[in-house]
Image 1 (cartoon, rainbow, N blue to C red):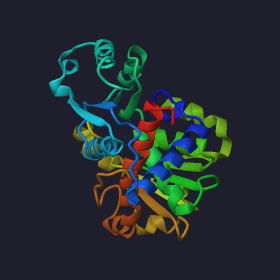
Image 2: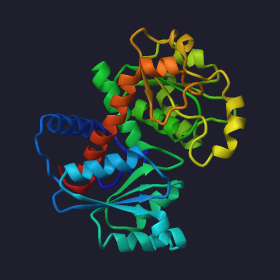
Image 3: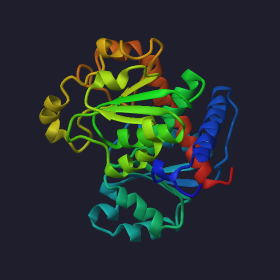
Image 4: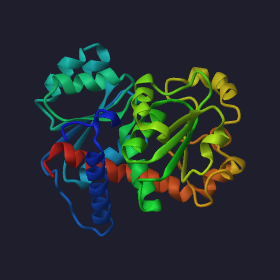
Length: 303
């Protein structure tokens, strides 16, 4: 696997390989078994969007793998002062073994891969969030024992999370129902992809309809980073889209809940539902570390 640019690029087999390796690395870490697969390797971490989980998990993960993470704030780089991305890609390719970038435009990630000569890992863009979705799939498999045949429901905005969850779920033989208000649909490229899966995909306006019979219910904030100015408008648009106890009653009794965090209790998820499913949500957050370590190993080695 050369890069991780978006979920659309991954095959079913590649996702399985990443998840299996993530399970192995998690086991080894929990049992104090060293796995210095990346000794002597360097990973540049470019952040044009701030983060808690992405930065800490990538830095810790690279350290545990024996490599060196290098934090690169856009404010401290020439790319933040207008240097073309193709020039940054060609320069950093001569210093580093790989790059993780968390930014706004998907095209910036794609250009790094196009003009550079080292692996590029997408830590998040406005279009997709592949590292988070791999952690979600890992967590669902841990709790449910399998992915194939499970029903996922996503309630909220057609953002990078919804885009990537649709692709990830369908590629792993799950069904997925998403509920979003008019005007907040997922990307047309993702909807076109989902057409090939028939009734395995459903987009509705009514959250209750999406959640019926769900094995896992997922949500995200209504106003993502960069959309803070739309917060009040979005609160009105997403009225009735809160995952609360009443909505969860339509899911299976043993349904789990996932949230990529940070969570706004009382908006996209009620405080009671969040706390009732906190174990699953924070297992999901922990699995960012293990899933991303697997991605780094797959990209930077032949393992």
